[in-house]
Image 1: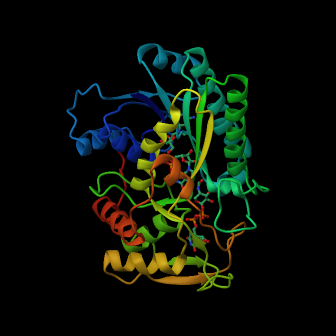
Image 2 (image 1 turned 135 degrees about the vertical axis):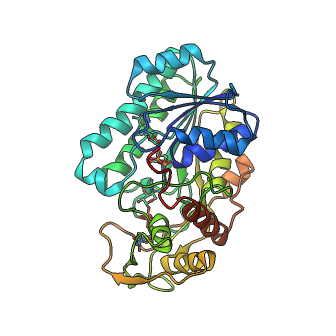
Length: 344
Ligand code: NAD
Ligand code: WQD
């Protein structure tokens, strides 16, 4: 199949392109490079053994809010399926600049869906997030867990886009929509050639630990050790980004005619605490990682992990990699590329 990967040079998108190509699909990437670098395309070719001038991966520097740019892509390329990774994702920034988030994420998703409709492409996989569950009453979270109050504009944009795509299916049942709710993606490709390259101070745990391990930051701040968890620190469902990427390849199965709307949690189904991750990372990098206990971060909840059995039942997918694998691959990427993709 030919897959339009919006946001395909980003962290999860790049890993998914690798898995799609390795599964025999062709990819057309549309990305405005607002949070990624074009050099990623060369890395994807290198990992997948494709030649420099291969037609199996194409890149368009395009913004998904730009309908004319999207029309050009759909006219030139015979697209079967769209995967939409394109979006802004920093929770704190979304509280400070909500309009940018609604405009980019929701506005972009609407323009992309409109372009799909204009060109008769009716299959979409959308990157959603566990954040849509808000603070759930029961753990583990299943796909039936009610959507609760979401505390930030970023999460709201994801819930809105889920609703918009469901409404579009209701209006035109020829659409097939897969909503993938990711838990906490971490790690990197085992080659060490692609990985997460955050701008500025990392917001998330593992990129921050990685920068302490490589000597770019002094210590990790552990946000609270008085939660009702087994060691007092927050518990999350960390998933290796390559397992997550493979989940998208598996989800293509759900884009058969008349599949309708399908929703899947993509996680391991296992919770790990901040201290578990810290210790696993120390094992991976072979050094002690300094940390200090800090106050709780506003908006954090104690425990979050999923029931991923629906994805296994219906897609035949489950996460295979351990927390140790995730930390080892994150460290390989970070130590081989201390400045990420650099200034190229
Ligand atoms: P990322 O920032 O690395 O990738 C997003 C890509 O989209 C970037 O390459 C960026 O340049 C591009 N982009 C943003 N706005 C665009 C626009 N208007 N037009 C074209 N391209 C645009 O982020 P990621 O971690 O790879 O996340 C991918 C998707 O998964 C996002 O939608 C994110 O909300 C979602 N998600 C991420 C996580 C996570 O923890 N990383 C968890 C759950 C869901
Ligand atoms: C994990 C744990 C922190 C940083 C976020 C988004 C969510 C989704 C995934 C996109 C928590 C603790 C963190 C640090 C720490 N993204 N922590 N020190 O908050 O579970 O989820 O990313 O959709 O929407 O909210 O991930 O990595 O920020 O935090 O102690 O410097 O690590 O308190 O317990 P989170 P995270």
